[in-house]
Amino acid sequence: MARGGRSWQLWLGILVSLVAFWYAAREVDPRELFAALARADYRWLLPALLLLALGQVARTWRWRLLFHRATRPPWRETFAALSVGYLVSTVIPLRLGDPIRAWAVGRYTRAGFAEALATVMVERVLDLLAVMVLLAWVAPAITAERLAERLGPGPWAHGDGIRWLTVGFVLVCYLGLATVATIGHRSDDALERLLAAIGLAEHRRVRLRAAWSGLVDGLSPLRRPSRALAGLVASLVVWSIGAFAYWLVMLAFHLGLAPTTAVFMLCTVAFAAILPSTPGYLGIFQWAVVWSLDVAAQVPHDDALAYALVVHAATIAVLLLLGPVGLRMLGLSRGDLRQRVLSQTGSAP
Image (cartoon, rainbow, N blue to C red; front, top):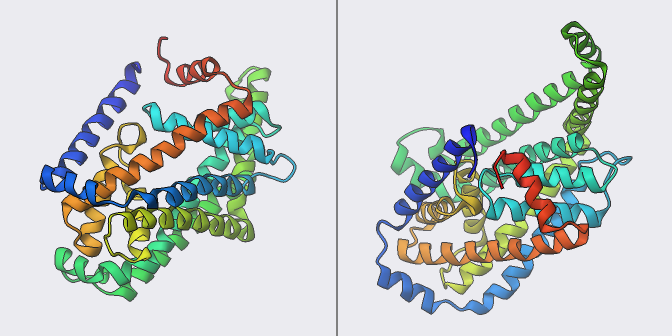
């Protein structure tokens, strides 16, 4: 159990997940749910699982693009660290997968922990921008009329209004973060004066300067529009692969929906994942799927929840299979990983 300040995050995540799952299942007839599960053609799961695994490869490619060429980790170690990080986030509370994979890259490659963690932060920014771009493409065609019904008149009630709101949000996010990254790159002298004024010991000043330098270097892709655009394109590829995999599972449940519906659903899941939850986003995932399929296509909640349970299980299965592969590729024992997780949580063994 996590101590002190961490424990409330754990319990909050459990509470939010339980409420979200109750909301997703509150109108579901158990008999209809099991009937939907029985009707599914599970042969579609095989290509979906392969695509989900391919998505992990695409994430590895995207992550490597964010490192400087001089410190870019090898493909093998990057894939392994990414897989281990996703394994940790799937089975352990408090979303420790990101710092764990940054630590693995820092330990097994020439890239430092600070730079690796900064690239993970950039990944999250690119994911947000990619989701917004995808929503600008699919949301007007799917949700303008439904949003008008639920929210009343407004810019969200028109396709063009949704597109312009989305594009504007993406540009504001990028320009703001690029500005922060640029200021950080030019602040080395100010940092040195601050550390000298504080009177820190020299060895601590050296460590802080190295950490700051790695952080700024990791954020540097945002300073260059060409690199930021390459990262955004890679992110769009990652999310498109995931959406297509989820659409294949829709075929298994005979939902008769277009691939754009899967894109909209996956974007909804991405936003819902921001909320506190249990490991693997249990409950949150099911609620996001049921809600998005209701908004996009008025899919009955019984069918939507059956689909959500299966596609979530397929996603988790891929991560649970690739995680131990990553451990083996790094030569990292479960005991080493466990000790690192404990050091992150401050928990007793």
